Image (cartoon, rainbow, N blue to C red; front, side):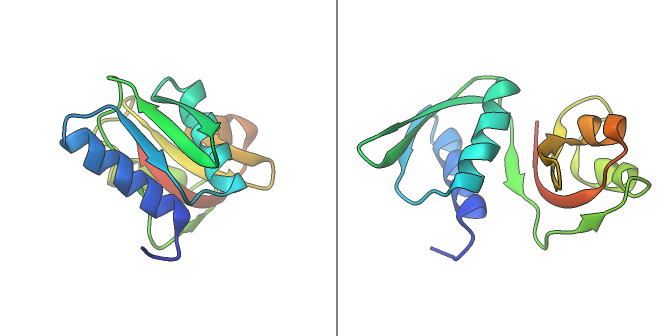
Length: 124
């Protein structure tokens, strides 16, 4: 276990998906991770709930890959396009998750609102 709860959780999700299972429980979580999972739930990639101090996650079939971006690059609105090409397999396929001063959002929302921030993860 590392100190990065977000990277650990996303790695666990990918390991469970590779094992052809669709459910897992995460014992270590934070408010930030819950916000990230809330965004992924809104994007229809997973579903989650908290039971007995454990985070129960159900992975949906629409999830192909989700990984944390390390190091956490700070991006301006002009640099987002460069990271879209770097981390996503296709232009309109998947999302970069960006932490801004307005909260977590996808790269599309950040471009619409003209806000930069820190890259957290990518998902498709």
